[in-house]
Image: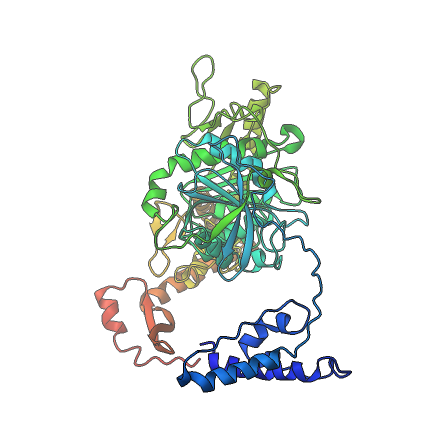
Length: 607
């Protein structure tokens, strides 16, 4: 409560202290207990003598209340002794906090460009530019980490996506903490991409987004967020991403759109091609272009390509849910301004990503020559009508990388055919180099009964396989996870089933081994005496013996791959229960189960 009686008692003490020193030399030296109660603290400006003060003392005419009336009159007489010297207060201009002051709504109601201030739980206020209907699925845009970067980078792209999409999306580009008009630490988006972007989505009244779009370091944050919060985004789009340790991206299963500039040394296209091979998504739309030749191809075509991808996955976005406003999640954003706040560029703020006109959207179609023959191979080729640099381009797919060949207005059919031939020639060189490999990447001995891992492309001999990837999913050469290769020719059994990925390598190795052994026998027969075989034949024979020994040991012994650790279960507000476990990975036969029974008597885990 406000302690009324305590406040009135303190008020009497303040009046007595003021009355005792008014008009004396010690007026400013006397301590006045204004801070002893909330009432006197509120009245301090009135009782200090700088204001005009009127006090009304109320008394009762009845005899029964004479004591209270007498006490009130004594208090009023004491208050009259307090002298005041009123001072005219200076005029103060009160700031207009209305964000729409000197601003207006977007005349284009379909786009409805405006600004928001999002109260992000745990991270403070975040400024954002947005456009589109707030009831539609959310598309979140994240800028890069340059010193002048902000949401203004995406301002034109968002408006184009809003105009192109038939279903409509709520596009929001944020000023990350420390950038643009948002306060905070610039390291936030780098260090905590998952928790921060999830909090932004919750602040917008949603549990997920239809798509998350990022550029440069913002693209890296988008990919890292997809790893940390795999259910947050239904689709992902990145432009010139910074990619550290891309082998982690194998866990990303969402449809992905990626654009790389081969002329940009800061974002190497070699990394992009590696990312393309590693991504675990079933729908990867990978594009390369040369800015020196094709200009701002990425800025021109990104909106149409993004709308195309979202359109094909509309049903999946609806099934996932959470991208539209939820009654169970409070909407914590407020108006931050109108169209002026959206288009206004602060001093030192980055320019918008280059805009383009005449977008017609991206469509999946079959391009044909005049004679009716197809220009492209496979069903994964795309063509768009989005801008002058993207007419009649195609994606050339191989099992290892995707190359794009966008054609400009000045490009003729001979140039396109030359690029296709170069791409096929590069692919043939890679295949020939891999098929000609003769040494195991792990033991550096001749390859015998080899396999090739699909992710890192390392080749292992059969003996090394028996001791490594047959039981573990990490490559023993580079420690890259995901050693399993998707192919039909399956062999082996265990935690990680092994697949043959390179039939040509297996065939050439078999021929080389057979040729070496035949040549050795022929030389011995022609000479009539035994002599030392050549060094390469001797090494191949040693590898064959090593492989046979490893296979005998594998058949004669029971090998188990164990997983151990703790299971955590909450036991109350301040209690956590830990249960140690040891588990056998992989499937075992009934005979193997009988042999394994009783091997593990007890499991303990000391934290």
